[in-house]
Amino acid sequence: MLLGTHTPKLDEKGRVILPSKFRDDLGPGVVITRGQERCLYVFSSAEFERVYERIREAPLTNKQARDFQRMFLSGASAEKPDSQNRITIPPHLRTYAGLERELVVTGVGAHAEIWHADAWNSYAAGNEDAYSDMEQEVIPGLF
Image (cartoon, rainbow, N blue to C red; front, side, top):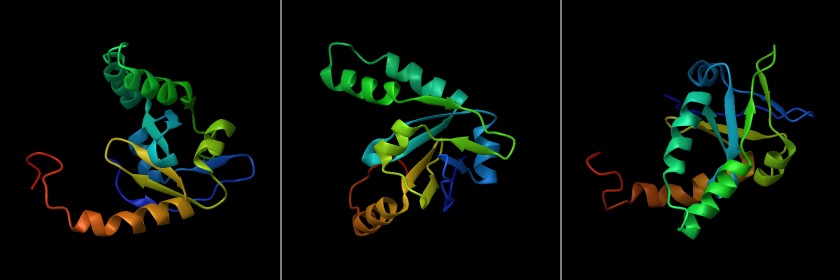
């Protein structure tokens, strides 16, 4: 289970070292793809396969499903850590997420997200009050 928030740096070649506890959970290879809110999603290969199987079940007659499939899958990139545990974030994904040197990597249960540090800070600040004031059950049966 991927939990917590870390602040690694992106090097000049577009590589980042994921936190060691994330590497342990993600395994020997990852799939990076476009996330929502202009972040990147990082899945273990096994988790990406599980998500892919669910996506394949979406009806091709649904335009929103087709749009989601195209954006999510067309940007996906399988990456293996190098000998120094760095993964390369492809240029098209760095551009999509506006990544620069300062990053935030946050664990979101079954996957991690990579954010430009300013974008994450803005997102978190803009959602903290709404989160603390939620009155409706968002995840059935949780609380």
